[in-house]
Length: 109
Image (cartoon, rainbow, N blue to C red; front, side):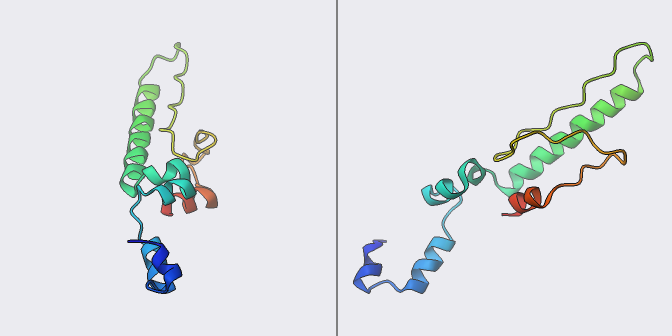
């Protein structure tokens, strides 16, 4: 596909928009727009979330079953996500991390 066809009148603006909208996730354009986040699919995000939950479950199990005299275990660090400037904080008192609007938008984009 030659993008000069748009200037020559052989490619409509609508067709060009459709082609750009449906670029593959690993295209140079999407990498330029989204950076490292373009490399992560929904599956990658779900796998990272599963690894984080498993690490938290192991931490909880080890914390509950440790001797009272030993030092508390360090809370597990989450798998780094693309575009994340800081790791997720420890869970709130309810034990649930509520994602921000930016985190949700990044996950679903």
